[in-house]
Image (cartoon, rainbow, N blue to C red):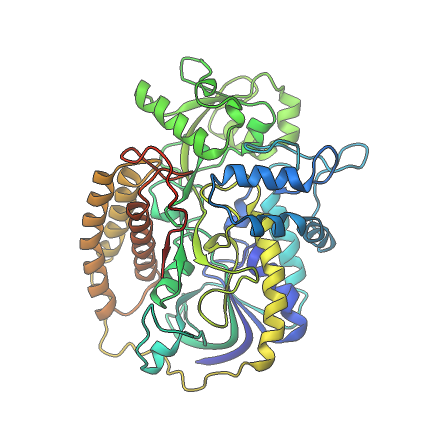
Length: 529
């Protein structure tokens, strides 16, 4: 089966949906998502979207907080661009039906999170992402020019490689012609040709054993672009959220929003003692890299499996009003957070690097854009400031749409692209070959490439991963494709990139802390080309 669209979008979170709404009046749009359209990292985002709305806050304060949090690796031009465009993009979200909480006086009820010097986070209770996803999907479903292909898995983006041309990382002008996409219900692999393609596939949390990301977050976009010889940047900076709910065997891990600490929650050891004052003068409101490392150290010192987040002093009514989702979730496992402390533990949460993208979200592959968590725009640097991610997504989706609308006027479909060829393959006899390899990758990354790293751990991780890579590539060549096999392959690719860039970065910076290089250097860019 072959299909031609002007705009192909891979992913159905805030990045993909907002782009779709912008480009729909200018051509045929197809959104490919490997689950239901509402299943995304956006949908799970609790905290909110950051913007300097009222005095005494200002764009400059937001810019400086972002730069400080990024630990010297942010692109200041990008930071200023995103912050300065924040008001217009938030107005747009509201015009599409998003409802942010307001006070009795009709002003936005702004929250504060770690690393922020002011109250500037717009939110909808503690389920802001779900509210944005709801509003955007409602608008998308009204557009006749937008088609959503649910439960369809993007396998590879199509480039000159598929025309029999040798494409290497040094090849100039690599072009994207669309993507091969598997219907997950039938197994049929279709060829979708497009004039431009937007990669909006979200994060990489499934590379680790425990993550707050949805189960679909297997780094598909980053892996596809890497295999297509696009540039990947700074993926060693994996953000571990300091406070996921300690609840054994629950996947994904439930997030305890940073807004809880912004509202007065205090981190304590199991014996009830505060400890963040030992690590940062901002205490429980320190940026995530500092807070996660502090918790990790306290757990190693004590031997405990978690620490506590104490909200008992806030008051039941206020907790139920501000954080109803968190309150009810904890209550469902027997914890009344107005009377008991919440057991929390750091957990893989956000990828700060990704597909290298410029100020218009253009990747290094022509006609291919990257937006959202799968992209590296330079905004986050070595550590993302809380609630900047949703903002980044809408700003760069808007900028990508401006460029793409103009670009399609001069792009033709590549009709020479062949259909997917799976002759000579057969279904794997044992699914355990895939599921066990996935568990091994998750374990390797969690044990050796977590919050604190060392040269020895990274080398061991790379050696172990090499074996699984060779086994999986052999399985891929001779097997009829399945979503599970494709996800495993993508996870291995992303794990390799994280380890390789962590090894190459001979310093500690932001989210990458290596005990063999405890201080920073001037090695500021880490790109695999």
